[in-house]
Image (cartoon, rainbow, N blue to C red; front, side, top):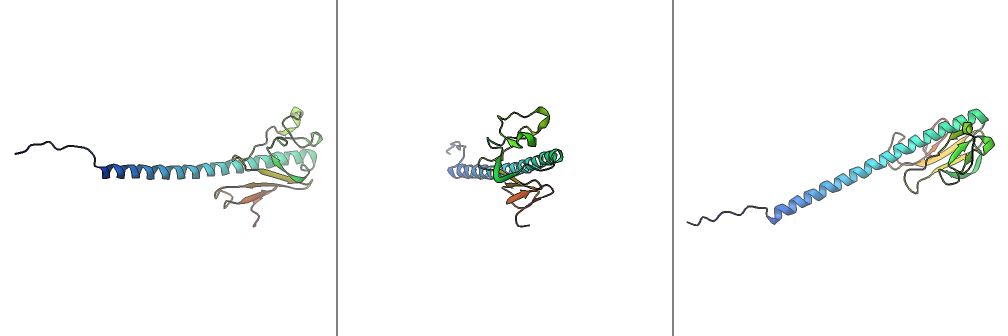
Length: 157
């Protein structure tokens, strides 16, 4: 009788199956994480726009009009980082000096994604803030939105 002990261990097929399962789980996790990051950026965008709208309403309450900007400007860009009183220019750069009691926003947020933009145009009576979402959000589908004093809407509405 031959009493050879059986060797323990995993076969090559078993190891390959485990590796494939680990790769699949990793891929699913990365996809889910990226989806959640996009939703978080959209939530940040909506919050930023609401904050900017509030500052604009305070500006209008004090000066009687919204900041007048005929050509669209990119908010949060180097030249438009603060919102001060009309007498001090409305949207100004971070280098501009505003009186402490005349600042409506000491820092205008930028879109959380590089290349994303918050774009502003305005007349004395109304303004338009344009921004784009990446995923479906509380506003609706992923698209470009226009924020005004009372609403945030997609161009199709």
